[in-house]
Length: 115
Image 1 (cartoon, one colour):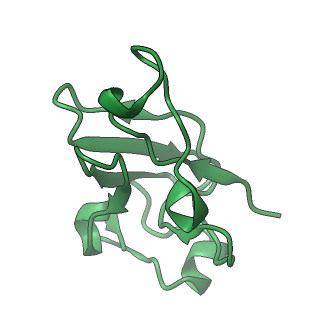
Image 2 (tube, rainbow, N blue to C red):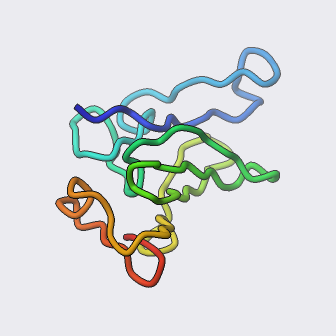
Protein backbone atom coordinates (compact mmCIF):
# COMPACT_ATOMS: atom_id res chain seq x y z
CA UNK A 1 0.00 0.00 0.00
CA UNK A 2 1.48 3.37 -0.96
CA UNK A 3 2.00 5.96 1.72
CA UNK A 4 0.90 9.57 1.45
CA UNK A 5 4.05 11.56 0.93
CA UNK A 6 3.25 15.24 1.02
CA UNK A 7 0.58 17.57 2.27
CA UNK A 8 -0.33 20.99 1.02
CA UNK A 9 0.64 23.69 3.46
CA UNK A 10 -1.49 26.71 4.25
CA UNK A 11 0.19 30.11 4.33
CA UNK A 12 1.21 31.44 7.75
CA UNK A 13 -1.58 34.04 7.75
CA UNK A 14 -4.17 31.22 7.74
CA UNK A 15 -2.49 29.20 10.51
CA UNK A 16 -3.63 29.56 14.11
CA UNK A 17 -0.08 30.26 15.35
CA UNK A 18 3.16 31.36 13.68
CA UNK A 19 4.84 28.39 12.02
CA UNK A 20 1.79 26.14 12.35
CA UNK A 21 1.01 23.89 9.39
CA UNK A 22 -2.44 22.61 8.45
CA UNK A 23 -3.47 19.99 5.92
CA UNK A 24 -5.84 21.15 3.18
CA UNK A 25 -9.09 19.23 2.80
CA UNK A 26 -9.69 16.61 0.08
CA UNK A 27 -7.28 15.58 -2.68
CA UNK A 28 -5.42 18.91 -2.41
CA UNK A 29 -4.36 17.84 1.08
CA UNK A 30 -2.16 14.92 0.08
CA UNK A 31 -0.01 13.83 -2.82
CA UNK A 32 0.77 10.16 -3.29
CA UNK A 33 2.78 8.03 -5.72
CA UNK A 34 -0.21 5.91 -6.84
CA UNK A 35 -3.72 6.91 -7.95
CA UNK A 36 -6.40 7.05 -5.24
CA UNK A 37 -9.73 8.83 -4.89
CA UNK A 38 -8.54 10.60 -1.74
CA UNK A 39 -5.23 12.11 -2.91
CA UNK A 40 -3.58 13.77 -5.86
CA UNK A 41 -1.14 11.54 -7.77
CA UNK A 42 2.49 12.68 -7.89
CA UNK A 43 5.66 11.42 -9.62
CA UNK A 44 8.99 10.47 -8.06
CA UNK A 45 7.53 10.11 -4.57
CA UNK A 46 8.04 6.41 -3.85
CA UNK A 47 9.83 6.25 -0.51
CA UNK A 48 9.50 9.97 0.23
CA UNK A 49 11.25 10.78 3.49
CA UNK A 50 11.52 14.55 3.91
CA UNK A 51 10.27 17.89 2.61
CA UNK A 52 12.24 21.06 1.86
CA UNK A 53 10.79 24.45 1.02
CA UNK A 54 12.62 27.13 -0.96
CA UNK A 55 13.57 30.23 1.07
CA UNK A 56 10.85 32.29 -0.62
CA UNK A 57 8.22 29.57 0.03
CA UNK A 58 7.35 29.30 -3.66
CA UNK A 59 8.64 25.74 -4.23
CA UNK A 60 8.65 22.47 -2.31
CA UNK A 61 11.05 19.55 -2.89
CA UNK A 62 10.40 15.94 -1.82
CA UNK A 63 13.05 13.24 -2.29
CA UNK A 64 11.79 9.71 -2.97
CA UNK A 65 14.50 7.23 -1.98
CA UNK A 66 12.85 4.30 -3.78
CA UNK A 67 12.28 6.43 -6.87
CA UNK A 68 15.81 7.80 -6.87
CA UNK A 69 14.16 11.13 -7.61
CA UNK A 70 13.21 14.52 -6.21
CA UNK A 71 9.65 15.66 -6.85
CA UNK A 72 9.35 19.42 -7.43
CA UNK A 73 6.19 21.36 -6.58
CA UNK A 74 5.03 24.94 -6.95
CA UNK A 75 3.36 26.24 -3.79
CA UNK A 76 0.45 28.66 -4.14
CA UNK A 77 1.32 31.57 -1.83
CA UNK A 78 -2.36 32.30 -1.07
CA UNK A 79 -3.79 28.82 -0.50
CA UNK A 80 -0.66 26.75 0.22
CA UNK A 81 -1.75 24.16 -2.36
CA UNK A 82 1.07 22.19 -3.99
CA UNK A 83 1.14 21.51 -7.75
CA UNK A 84 3.84 19.30 -9.23
CA UNK A 85 5.69 21.02 -12.06
CA UNK A 86 4.84 19.52 -15.45
CA UNK A 87 7.05 17.11 -17.35
CA UNK A 88 10.72 16.68 -16.56
CA UNK A 89 10.85 19.79 -14.35
CA UNK A 90 8.54 18.14 -11.81
CA UNK A 91 10.64 15.04 -11.17
CA UNK A 92 14.43 15.05 -11.21
CA UNK A 93 16.19 11.69 -11.17
CA UNK A 94 19.75 10.44 -11.11
CA UNK A 95 18.73 6.95 -12.17
CA UNK A 96 18.42 5.65 -15.72
CA UNK A 97 15.01 4.23 -14.83
CA UNK A 98 12.47 4.56 -12.07
CA UNK A 99 10.52 2.01 -10.08
CA UNK A 100 8.08 -0.49 -11.59
CA UNK A 101 5.23 1.38 -9.88
CA UNK A 102 6.30 4.63 -11.53
CA UNK A 103 6.75 3.03 -14.95
CA UNK A 104 3.14 1.88 -14.62
CA UNK A 105 2.26 5.51 -13.93
CA UNK A 106 4.12 6.59 -17.10
CA UNK A 107 6.94 8.32 -15.22
CA UNK A 108 10.22 7.44 -16.91
CA UNK A 109 13.67 8.86 -16.41
CA UNK A 110 15.10 10.68 -19.42
CA UNK A 111 18.42 12.46 -19.44
CA UNK A 112 18.74 12.40 -15.66
CA UNK A 113 15.10 13.44 -15.10
CA UNK A 114 11.86 11.52 -14.76
CA UNK A 115 8.37 12.44 -15.83
